[in-house]
Image 1 (cartoon, rainbow, N blue to C red):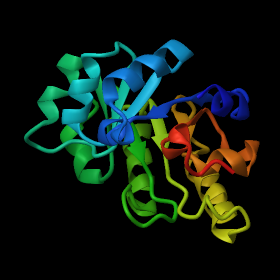
Image 2: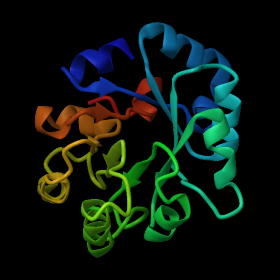
Image 3: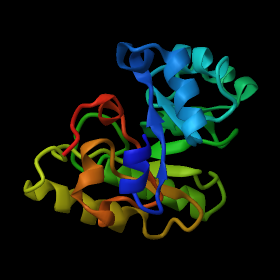
Image 4: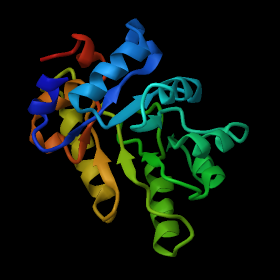
Length: 199
């Protein structure tokens, strides 16, 4: 974590501790990371977030976002969803802090470009609050010479340029080693914290 935080310059270095901290144990790993200075954690599911909340008071984001059944459980535990679709945005309806995931080329999760632009219109007219964080995920960051990295970087810059309040995050593990233009406000190392994808 110390190495990755230094590598990331002035960007906040968060930590992904999904899947029981990649099988190493959520409780001890989260405590060590918090002691090292980590202020923001990412997990995959609400169940993981609730387990992590017993360990730390720091910010916790849930990659999977919310469902119509579980969204009420986030606020009482100060857990923040990563909203992955316009439907999740509508269910959450600005009830508390949240992140927005925009798809810039991973084609797996996240709002489409058209939905994201529609969201901006809703923010501009006051119907929806600007998110605390906007993130995307690089599809080929482990391949430093892959042209898609720069394509996604340009898309992310263009889509988020008008968002003045939101923090931005594009890079997970391998993205940290692509250069400072990929750092934005926050990086989100996962497997690299545990020795993988360190270039």
